[in-house]
Image 1 (cartoon, rainbow, N blue to C red):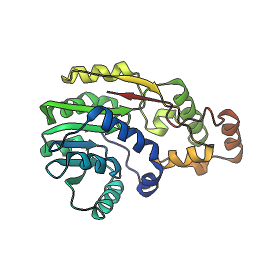
Image 2: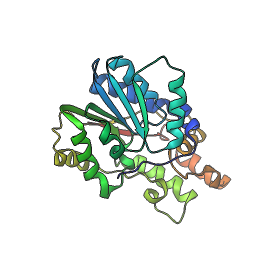
Image 3: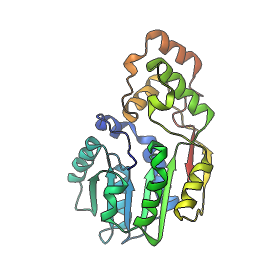
Length: 252
């Protein structure tokens, strides 16, 4: 089963994920466009912010299931759910395999998740997503792709915090070019109706904010390992205009 990073800082992530939330809302409204009464799977739902958005669109007659392998994030999601009026949302610990008995679904939504999947398990995971959808169902996702600027930022940060590991091993982020994901989709039986690669111009205002976000998002990342000298090197290398959190994103 493909796994996502298991974190113990879910509360931090819940308050640090505004960019993902905004991007996810755009993806929901512009691409997925769920209708009232539909059933939607939010794969890698995190703390459930976007799951709630999906629920507001499918209405009382619909159904939304949020799945995430991080028990801390699921706990935060369930606490948020208690504050809401009765809405058609269920949160489930796990990933796509745990979601299979809960289908079929009209749509699968996944926001900045697929680049965490182990490469050896992607084909099976994509096939499981295809199988859990209704015949006219839709898969909509956004992910980080293999791009030089983003790779350089991750490489330089993790070279200073985990000098004995390459950036992929240290961060857990497994990025590939878009054609790799197009092939996975086609092999599973999906008809790709739209794919886009475009630059995200949003940047963190400073290195400290960037490191805070990485701490909230990446398992085992410890910014405390950065020395004053290392921080100065990063500050000199990545000014405000280039210290972009996620310079590129990919829509399907």
